[in-house]
Image 1 (cartoon, helix red, strand yellow):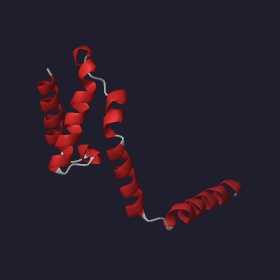
Image 2 (image 1 turned 135 degrees about the horizontal axis):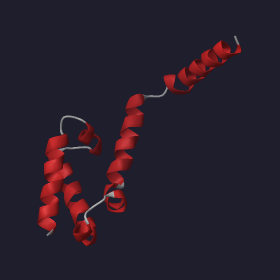
Image 3 (image 1 turned 90 degrees about the vertical axis):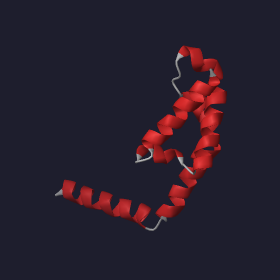
Length: 97
């Protein structure tokens, strides 16, 4: 019985905490932060092959410009635009050589 009460309280707590928040505002904030920090985060986290490490800022900057030009958000990489975004990344890497 205690577990049932705990589970119900947890569900109610979750609904209270997130039920009234505007998911569009949360999504917009996430997109904004990803967009602002894209190049820095890309350079810090991308696992480029050794021969591309010194060119990481150039590659990431190219990716950012091309994504912006095509109207992509970083989260689009998880959807149907993944293949086109991969093409952009590969093109930027080729241009950096």
